[in-house]
Image 1 (spheres, rainbow, N blue to C red):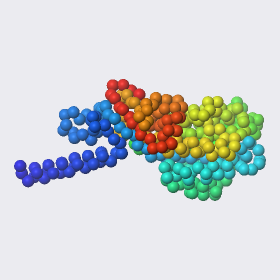
Image 2: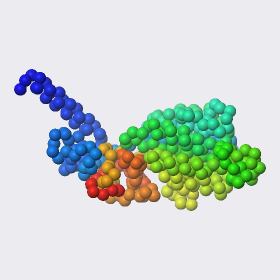
Image 3: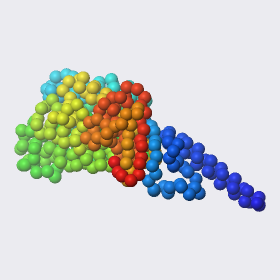
Image 4: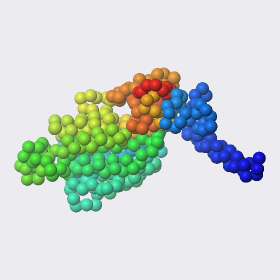
Length: 368
C-alpha cells in the first residue's frame, strides 16, 4: 500500500470517529438491539437516512422559548372586574410575573412583546420585533420593561400574534419548543375593513354601535385573529391564552374561548371556558405557574425525528401512555416534524414531581 493510500485511510478513519463522537452527543439512548443512526455507510444493513428504522430512544428535556404577548390596551387600566378600583389589571399582571418568572427563568427562555407597541402614537401599531428576545435569566429585564410601560391604545391582537409568529418561525430548530403566551382582557380590534354597522362593537362595553359605524377599527376582530392563532398552531407554535374576563361580556368570553381552542393548549381544568380565566389576582399567578411548569418540565425532545410512517409507543417511567390529541391526559407531538412531544394531565404532573424517563419505541409499518 502506498504512502498516499495509507494517508487517505487515516483521514477516512478520523472522519468516521468524529461522526461517531457527534452521534454520541445527541443526549438520547438507543436500544442495543436496533440500528444506530450513525452506522457506517458501508454496512449492508445500514438504512438510508430517509428510510424508517425501528428503534428505541430515550427523550430528553426540550429547550423552550416562550414569548409573552402582553396586552397593554387602555382597558388594562381597569380593575379585574371592570371597575376603576385598584389594583389595575396591568399591576396584577406585573405582580404575577414577579412571583412566577424567577422560578423558571433557568429553564425557559422568556421573551416579551407588548401590543400595541411601545414608543408610538399609533393606537393600533405593533412592533416588528419583540421588546425582549427570548433568553434565560430574563425575569428582571421583563419586570423592568413592565415598570417603564403603561397601558395605552387599542387591542391589535391579530397584529401582535402575527409579529410574534414571524419571530418564532425564524427560531425553528430540532427539539426546540416554541410557544406564545397571550395575556389579554379580550376584545381584539383594530381592523378597519370590518362593517361598523353590523359588527360586534368593542366601544363602551359593546353598546356604542355608532362609534363603530364612525370608526370600524373598534369592531371585534375575532375572525382573523383566531385564524392566525390556528395557523401558527398547525406550524408547531401553540398559544396559551390567559384571559382577564371580568367585564363578563358573552362575546368577549366567546372570543377568548375560540382563541384558546385554536391555540392548541386550552386550560385542562375547565371546558366551559377553555382559556385560563382570570377574575382574582391569585388566578393569574396560578395560570402563569401552570403554563410555565408544563413547558419547562413536560416537553421532551426526540432525535432523530420519528418518521411519519412509524408507529410510536411512549412510556413514562415504564408505564404506557396513550396519545391524546385533545391534550387532557397523555402525550402528543408538539411539532409537525415530530422532534418534540408534550405530556399532559396526570402524565405531566408525574414528570413534574420527579425526574422522568420518557421512552419511545418506534416501529415501522404504521403511523401515530
